[in-house]
Length: 431
Ligand code: ATP
Ligand code: MG
Image 1 (cartoon, rainbow, N blue to C red):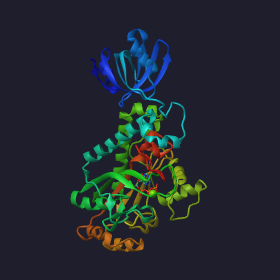
Image 2 (image 1 turned 135 degrees about the horizontal axis):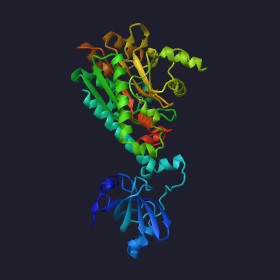
Image 3 (image 1 turned 135 degrees about the vertical axis):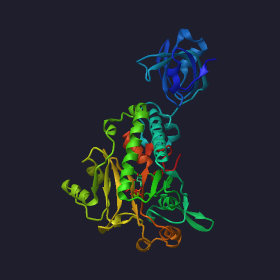
Image 4 (image 1 turned 45 degrees about the vertical axis):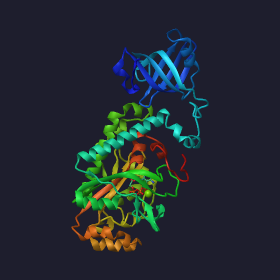
């Protein structure tokens, strides 16, 4: 029996007989020749069934096999420049494990609702396969970079006693007779862990009941949040540009094939390296004004504004020092102008919008107490957080990078919903 190998490894077996265990992705019927595109999870490969090389029964199986039937195929690996992936399998054995009837996702075009209802099957399609593999690499790059730069993984809880990014997007649940909320961010907990470990990050799912339908918002998304003790706004931006450049370059190196499947023009991504341009919120308002977008001071940017700003530059851009009123309560005030916060967002190029929000956090107990009051936040639930300013408070900074926004940008996708295996969007929780 020929060795079972994965499609991603066939190049190592040129000229040898191997067994592929997978599914039929697509086929072309040329009479005595059947061209079968197989997939096994690690890749896609063409197998050729020639009538003379198989038993009658096996050739008949190759002829009648249907899309997404599970199959076991044995054959000789041959290099062939015309074959996708550069190798082809000349079959000498073919067997159907289960014959699939009426697989709903055919090679023709389908509407998005149809596909979203069948997300559990849609994941088998080549583009979805490519996106998930890019996502895995982005996550791997994130962890490697942080682990190699002195950040300790210290995860934050998912069930929390209070809001941290504003109460309008909170998911409430019942917790043994008390109210609890699904985490919107691990940030407050990171501020505790950096005082214990110096540089930390948490990485996990976050939940926001976003009530507007946009192509950049999910209800459940994954965020990585690095935080640093003894760091300021400037340190934050330096770390972010190194970090994001690494993620992009590593993905370009490791996921060339997938980006090709996605027809991503990678020339723009190749240029992503530090430093990234930095503009202030006030400068951003001026750029918008010059482009006919008058925005009142103090208002946050929407997607169209972000697109205008980003299109002025080739690389991601930092917009820093937003008015305190459009940022979370814990942002440090700008000593030069207390109406401003030491906050910074990173906007991706090509109109993909904000991928990171971050900045320097308030070190002073008094200012924090005042902000909690102004924002109408429950002080009792945040008492522990105030302790961090009572016992050895230091300047500190950090940020949150949204995994799905980053993958949307790197893959060049129109909508964020394809970047997570099972998207939770406004009103949709199936499958
Ligand atoms: P936006 O203004 O676009 O809603 P935000 O200011 O609410 O973003 P932050 O609270 O700073 O975002 O969150 C940090 C990062 O998390 C964002 O830069 C983005 O990458 C990601 N993010 C935030 N909300 C969502 C969401 N609903 N779906 C997917 N990613 C999100
Ligand atoms: Mg938001």
